Length: 361
Image 1 (spheres, rainbow, N blue to C red):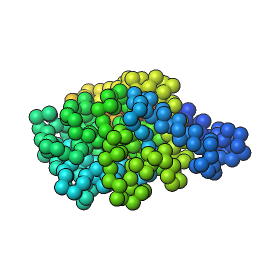
Image 2 (spheres, rainbow, N blue to C red):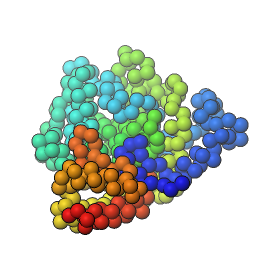
Image 3 (cartoon, helix red, strand yellow):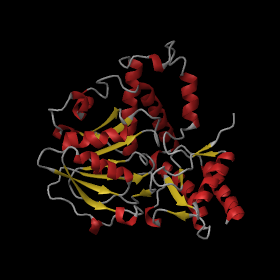
């Protein structure tokens, strides 16, 4: 079997070492005579996987007591509603900083539940950047502040996390979690669908401060409360057990490679290869994001004509590179270069971009 270069935006590429281990353990997990897919989530073997995943998550983020790592379902889209349901009481306001399509969706859901103020938005410029500090207009006494650290569709990422004071800061990190070091202790809550950087589809990670959990409403259905999952160590109901198992293996892989500093160095090398091909094309390839806000995870760019973009995607796929079409809402090209993608894939893409330019520029 020949492997393709997988640039899909999610579900996305997984580490080969993790897939190999899962394959080896699939039929008989730890000598139990059955697959972990068949195992009770109340078994000591699965409870150990669940506990290790939480410990690894917190260790990689440099977090200790006072935080929980929860494993939920429903994706980041469910969190768009669950956050305001828990933390936006009647009469209060939540601030949202919007830098792309996913931030817009988060605000839309919050407004179904309560008052959500857009403290800053880069929509007017076509979502090409992140706002400067002076552009962020926060509400006095806001219940929380929400931002998206990396926008997959527009390819925009916060180069540095903004200092927004003492209001609880909540971040959707679905597409750049565990890709670089940052001060996780500045956040009251971090959440991420696992299917881009840290695992398969089916599990959503929520890393949340215990004092924020305590502030949540207690009149919601139990399944919608963070306190329910914290009290039961994510085992209130049947969890996405196999997805958590794979997530735990990916976290172990990141740890073994050297943690978040090693991930950042690896991801920076990959991004430089692709952005180098864009910048060296004389304008044939046009990056969407402003250089200072370029994503290290999702490289988005356009060609002179839509017909050339379709040709680019088709020829790239024929050369073994899949998932390069831009999001259906914006078109263009998007190369998602998440943690597990190897540097050789980015080198292959950069080389292909040079060849395509010579043939069609």
